[in-house]
Image (cartoon, rainbow, N blue to C red; front, side):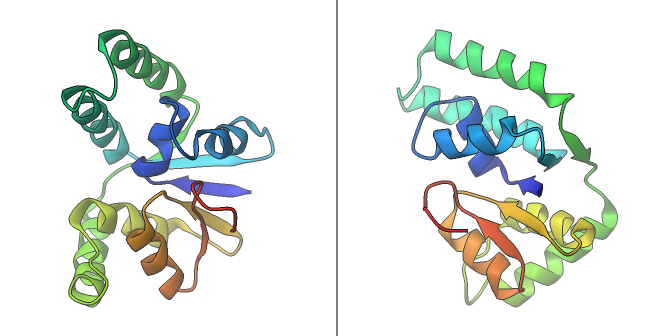
Length: 149
């Protein structure tokens, strides 16, 4: 399978929480091709610092997760954040921001996916709003916190 990971799902590979087991299985499956948006690198670090400030993780867990991410980053297919993706994100926000609650960074991930995805691709996210919005556009979704595709 070709899988495009949003940061909400990707972080589960580097920090044990709900959905970690499924994310780990998806990423470690050599039959799967893993894609992320370049933005995920910055968003990932921000998410970890948020967990640290909330006392969900400690210094050692923070450092370990960042080191693990940096080691794995080169194994992912990384899509650059491009101007066409920004325009697509704006379109998606105008279409779904008011009714579905689509947010800025989620719109950027979804936009990059929309521009890349071909038949059979899956968008992987642990965000109900984002998953629902991606499904509204007719794409395959995997939410690692749920048991269904």
